[in-house]
Amino acid sequence: MKTAALVAITLYQRYVSPYKGYRCAYHYHTGCATCSRLGFRAIRRYGVWAGIGLLRERLERCGIAYRRYARAHLPQRMQRGFIDGCDIPCDGDCLSSIPCDGGCGDCGNWGGGDDKKKKTEEVSVHIPQARAVI
Image (cartoon, rainbow, N blue to C red; front, side, top):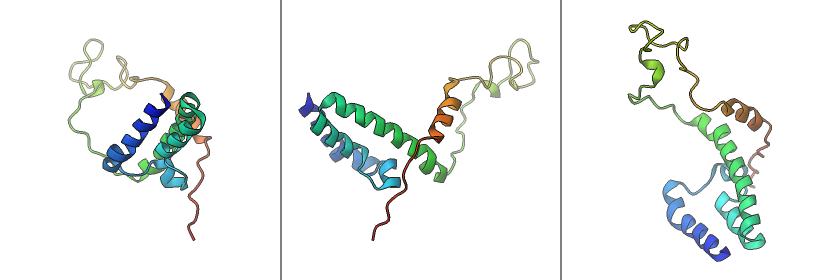
């Protein structure tokens, strides 16, 4: 199982990573090893289950680094015609010619409520800055 996991990471590094970009956000902002490199070393050294546990922690920090740093510099995309429930008139309580403004129905309450909690928890996670190269 250890060999299969190491082969899978090697295939990812060789064939998938060059097409999506060679670096993860954590590596880009800290200068530390990439997530796939850390996963390879952790699985090789500690075994599959402990290595996957370490890799999972790193991937969480990598996601936080991406949301904190990389997405702030990306241009916002225009909406491509998708109509959610709040763009169409409500049927029932509201007048049919007035779009739903959250007063009737569950508009604005879509998705889980964990997003706000997750964002407040992410603020306390320390992501070190990149080391200076001399």
